[in-house]
Length: 128
Image 1 (cartoon, rainbow, N blue to C red):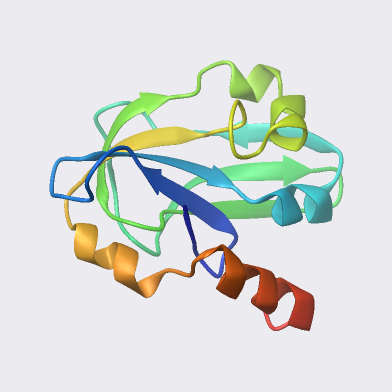
Image 2 (tube, rainbow, N blue to C red; image 1 turned 45 degrees about the vertical axis):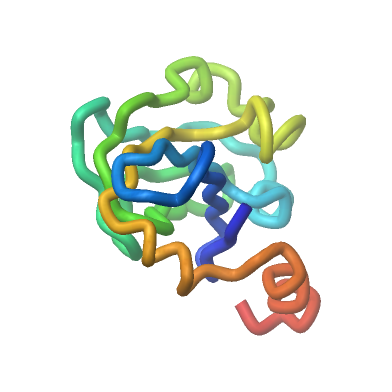
């Protein structure tokens, strides 16, 4: 699992090669920081996401936050139950709380993301 500075995570199923499927979600830290989630906007299956660009929104009672793609690719699956059950994000952010699955177009983009230890260091230092 790799992390973006914007608090999204990505996990590749199998080898990180072009066309591999990767699951994207938001970190437990981000879910805790947002608190009281009320709305989520997700992309359509078949749409393209671009690394570093917004692919949706998540809204809490205190803020609206963009969801940023950690890597580029085509959306192959959307967790359609999530907008009606946002509690899944807090209960299991790295499992049942996944958001979208993409078919990677450029796996080398994974190299610019952080591993768990580096991400933990960034959030503990408050430099995010």
